[in-house]
Amino acid sequence: VQLVESGGGLVQAGGSLRLSCAASGFTFDNYAIGWFRQAPGKEREFVAAVSWSGVDTSYAASVKGRFTISRDNAKNTVYLQMNSLKPEDTAVYYCAARPRSGSGYDYWGQGTQVTVSS
Image 1 (tube, rainbow, N blue to C red):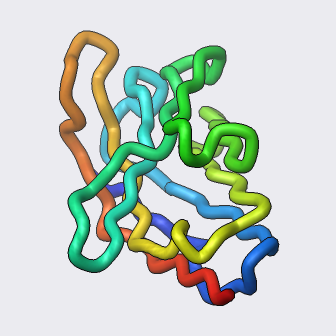
Image 2 (cartoon, rainbow, N blue to C red):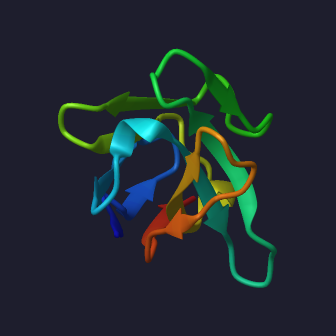
């Protein structure tokens, strides 16, 4: 089982990045996928999630209206489009997979660094 994040980097405030989460080793469309982030010295926090079908999405209040989560089940990939980035969005971003029948996230990626300069 693998979840591999990519697309992180350094961007100026107000800029955009698109993160990708490529999955393998499990039945992708049986899982909801979430994005989380962890900034230095802070706890990991929820960012966004998408249901197994892609129909239902949810967002943290801090990113709603700026970030968009989507998935392509044919490519076993989930995306996080991040617009109007702020310095406080700086963190390591992780994707994770939660089974349809479960309440917790079973699988986690290794993370990708996003740095937003002011």
